[in-house]
Image (tube, rainbow, N blue to C red):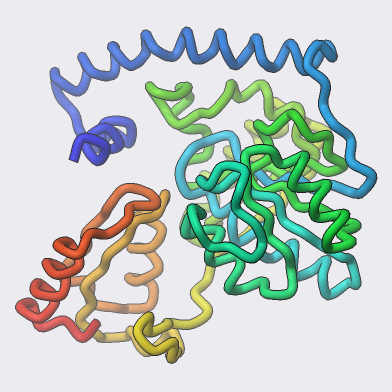
Length: 309
């Protein structure tokens, strides 16, 4: 509940005197965060801390804000494309599992990694804090000649050949405030490091918003091309038996929505776009692990509301 309340303050949903006081308090903590961040970047920039160059091409796909920017679908899209082009691709992800997770293990990895493994069974995915070491393993064990660095914009330890930054059109610049006051992981001026911008969820934003994002990115980094992307559902999967349905099945159905993702508004938008009747929508924090009690409550409430799914 505390995390949900905190996120509602950042998004502006919570207003009033108490929210203002909390925002002011959070602003104080941005200064030590910025000091640590700037020191780290300076150490890398001046070679005091060395970045490692691996003997293969490296593509970094990252973001400058927290939450669901649409980075993972782009990682999957890029890996599939390169794999189809004949490249021997491997993905390096931080995940949550420390240094011991491997391509063969699903222990201690997050839901995004599990999704990538399920959808990219021909592409090795190596998870761990030390992505340089994981990259060496990918080259040695899987003969990888191209590495995709998942969530790599802030991972300066590895040099890269292409730095792609995903900008969420629904919240492009994190409220202009650094963590913990806002959603920015580092100052916007650092976008000058990017080689390519991909604006995501463009089908959920208006034309004026997209234009303003183009303008801002061009002011910060006029040399990086900007492209747009949209997110569309491919199928509906029954998690009990793996069967699938076309997304259009949702039209007119009474739906109980449940999400634990970084951008729950985008999921609700998709359901409404498919003309589902959203009778209840429960939002949990990103990567939330549902308890048996929560699942039981959802099943009970779904039945009592007469939901179709």
